Amino acid sequence: MTETHERPLSIVVNNSPRTTTVDTRSTLVDALRDQLGLTGTKKGCDRGECGACTVLVDGRRVLSCTMLALAADGREITTIEGLAGDGGVLHPVQRMFLEKDAFQCGFCTPGQVMSAVACIKEGHTSSTDEIKEWMSGNICRCAAYVQIVDAVSEAAAEMEAGSR
Ligand code: FES
Ligand code: FES
Image (cartoon, rainbow, N blue to C red; front, side):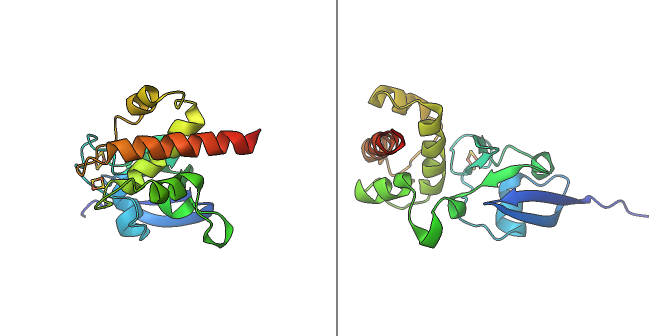
């Protein structure tokens, strides 16, 4: 008898409960993209070096290429597809990336945006140097860094003003 490596996976993705079956060796990024069809999350290096695969797991940023899918069982995942509000109203970080032209090819952008959302929530946006430090795990091969930092800074200011 051959042993199967498939196991059930139940996660809440973008506020929707999802159940699927994954290979025990699958990473979260592969489960999201291949099993659940959420291809907004990108896979760049596939070894924890570029940040393209960043998603939020229970509100914290995680490199989904470094996490086994089954390690996410029972947890809440937010991907780029779940960031916009009702009626598709863009999250302030998404809107600022557009306004500040903070991308070129766009491949790194979903990871940059998810990381920025967490960076702001963590309170690491008091200066451009702090933003650079706490966004340093997200590589942009198009080198849109100046605009990315600007977008994160502006979104942080807007979100802080909105929460007062
Ligand atoms: Fe995950 Fe590069 S694809 S860090
Ligand atoms: Fe091309 Fe960042 S916009 S890699």
